[in-house]
Length: 368
Image 1 (cartoon, helix red, strand yellow):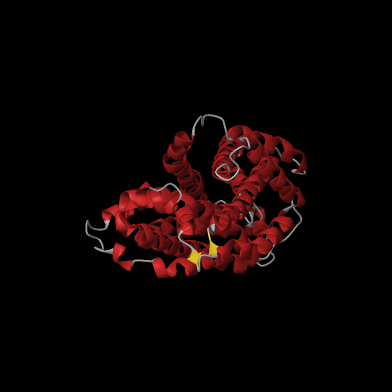
Image 2 (image 1 turned 90 degrees about the vertical axis):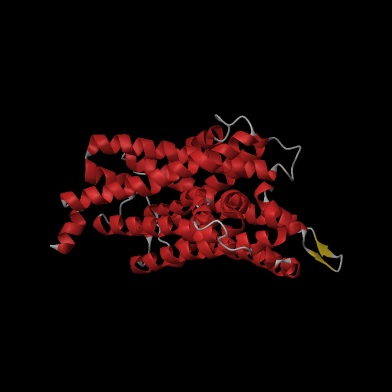
């Protein structure tokens, strides 16, 4: 068996929460404000609907084909040849997306380490993530569990410290142009919420699968609430200028000033992003090597860790010559691909399986 470890539903939730939230916290308010203006607090609500749908798809695929990831689902549903093609596309997609995430991380950290080459920053992250992936699903789960409070507490502290500076008047007028702008602002976050479909790689290794469903839905709800709060805080601070600020959460940290002593919490923002990026990259990394091993019918994914890491670093630079190009890719192309591969294609597989009455042999034996 490729993976013998087990994780709890709570650990799965702590692994998936940073996956959904980390990128959205960094650039989300700015992207959403460009379309929704002061109604951006509504955009996470619309975007989360596809997240709940992706969870529903993953859960029902797992019920029909227990113990399998989407790579193996496709083989059972479509046959060997179509599944081989679809599996290759999925693996290429995972590498591409993980490369983009690594590049986002490197460009942000470069604001603090301006003399350090992007390649060094990217390689350092991949090296640390490779150690976690090498340890297996249990190491990933425990690492996420340890880092979860460190990811949450600085954010809560920062919001509490800037609270006196918030101006709720920036929220008005509410829905001045109707509900459509807030829905347009949800286009990019749609892709972020579909990333919850990565649970399809984790569900086979849950110690209690019944609790996994509740945990996954809580993750989407928690991410929606977090994004809404982040949008409101940045809107109350920056008003109409929010859409023109690249990293609103970074500017929010600059507002912290307690008695001219406790101030400049930019390092806390960096800590949140480093932890979030580590968990997110590790999850995509693990899905890539596990999926590749399943696609090639290998007995272990360990030999794939190093080459996958090297390819991820290469993909983080391939076709992205500048930071402005990265912005276009992450705002338009990647969310569209995420929605396609983490929602529409799995939904198609589930519909096809239902229409053809496809189930795994284990499921057929249990239901029969």
